[in-house]
Length: 186
Image 1 (cartoon, rainbow, N blue to C red):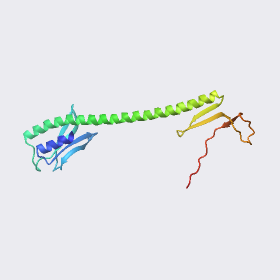
Image 2: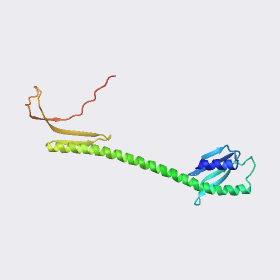
Image 3: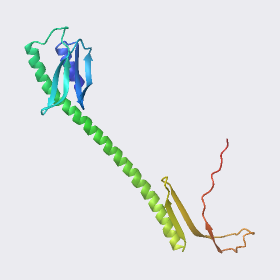
Image 4: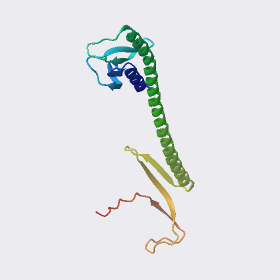
């Protein structure tokens, strides 16, 4: 919207330069412009509800020339209307940023819930099954954000290795240890 306002004013009044600068803190930043400035442009305040939110910058048709009273009145009216539009553009941008933050937060929460559900249900069912078997399953949260699981579970041998001394169908207890990483090909 702001580019259309600047282009329309510049073309209708045959100005070499027209721009809108929006206030950001104590400074003004050019939001949109057409043409090239010649000398010091006329700066009209863009006001919304008694608050200056920007400036309408306009270069005269020729250096040293000024706007006549009719042009000045027209520009004052245009600046008031442009202030309302600039405020609407600012609100729209704020709304878009807010919406993006909301969507990001919602996506992060969904990922967290999915992870918590997956991890929580899996670990809870492991603990429950170990308890049913009269054994233990201990889960530790690691400082780096990982998880360590220690489980002591019964193991039923179907065909025991000859050197183990276990008979078929007997129960042995093993501590499940994490496997060591295997070095891949260089």
